[in-house]
Length: 486
Image (cartoon, rainbow, N blue to C red; front, side, top):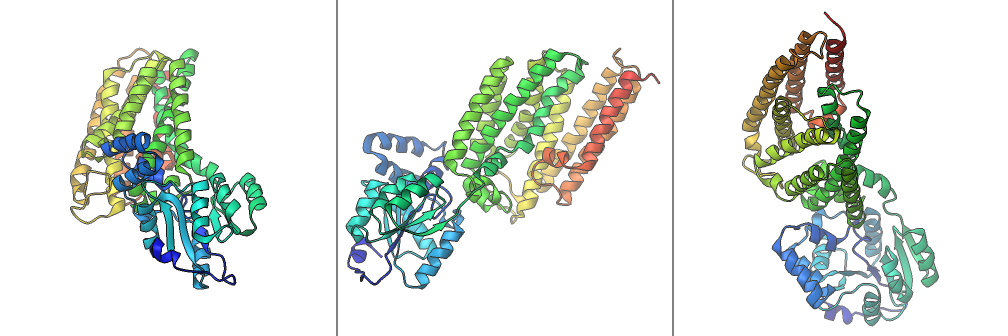
């Protein structure tokens, strides 16, 4: 129904008040403006939209973002409790209005998808209907106290002040107290109450196991009693963890649409709406600052900056470039080793860098094969935000297996070099490490082929008892070779 047609509609005093429903944070667990902004951070249209913000105001800015980054309404994280309430009210004949500060195009798209609303009141290129402006528009349409309003935050208080009834959706206790003083509460619906847990999940603490690589140079340099090296390696570990979590948050924010189409990634905090974009991106900025500050403390700021640039470039563009993406992933693993060497003052040998390069390239290829296997797309169909199709799996498996065997060959050469080192009492025992590492990698490939691998081989290994057994065996061999003469 158009606005002109809606104005011709009248309501008797015996009718239930028309229910006006906010969109961002109320009807959906997200913010459509922020989604539009992060959906194309490298797009030149975003720069033009920002210029529009300064030249023509917020309403024109929203219009520009909506035109440049249209959202798929079917993928948005809707508040199911509120949808159920609205469906019940609609079935009983109540007049429903989508009243949002989002742009008209966004509102029409959502309303068309849901098929629940009789009318739309939204921002256009000249009016930004947020707070008092929305209250004025609704009063002009329905009269003061002539409507009920469903909202979620303090910006809705001015609307509730002018409404005849309030529907509180996922509000804080402070907003609830103030809203109850402004209008009678028709209903109160809970929303996401575990945002802290969702934030921690989005930070991916389980991925921090990768950053244990910074401690490897201490062992390869036979410097386990160097306390200053351990201290600086710990600072390097914290720097990588904070920076990586910051980038994970940013990456998930820019990957919303693709994640919502993925069978498992759609459950990620941003994609599911369990974590708001504003909160997640604010924490991402704080984590980035923490990572840089910790890197300064251990003298590795250039390493962390390089890692951040590489990771950001990967998130924004390189992950979509076939083969470039896996080489970049391999480099992101290797830079952790390199950073550990810089922090501790114990540089890595070229043999170890070569081994890690092949090893991590193989793991990166394994991760891509696992992703392709989980999507099960049709032949020739590209996976969202990836440069591969399911028909690429055989060649990627070949590349990955070759890289795994090459890493074992380089490891054998490295062991031969270490076998002549005076630090070991029984250097010949080191050869036992080579078949163990090859067995571990072959098992990962077999698990991927059988469908057991879920995207990340490092995380999979951290939860796999066989991988733990292999790791313990390697450590035992090193200890035995170092201390026991055979």
